[in-house]
Length: 204
Image 1 (spheres, one colour):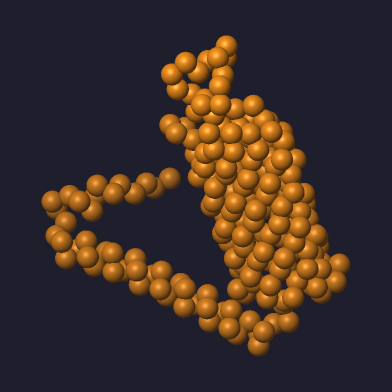
Image 2: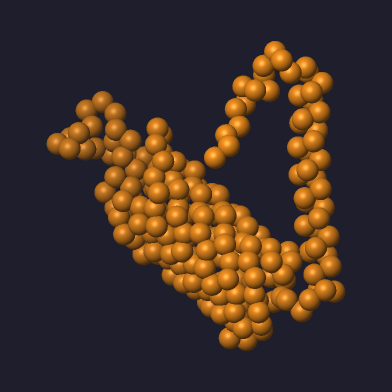
């Protein structure tokens, strides 16, 4: 994997004008991407009868130290036949030691192919996972002396990468199954965790 070193832009071998030009090029790329996506969104109905919006409820499974079951919801916008933006929130109500209850919030893209009856896709969705009662330690916190001061709510960066398939019983309904690797970034380390969803939704 090619890694980008931010120190490269600060080196004395690069003139200030070069750094400015580099930043401008990146900004132009972002603007062009947003304009292209907006154009696709505005012309979607003229090009296809694909419903533009999708909302769904789902049953979720997460293996992040514990195997947890939860419920959630998802909302998506079909930008084109292959690309969609979507956001998802899942809640895991089981109160686990050193974690508490979990809330997973994600936003990202879904890229795939579909027919009138089914489709396959990959997904890349960054976000956050919240533990509402995580063990944070501190003076005097050990297995024999655990007080409320040893625990606190914490948010951690998360990245869901995976894929799945969809079935369209009718033009305006969808059954979806997806599985992914949920990377959670803790202080000093990363953790890879299995996440799966199955849900039913409406397209309009």
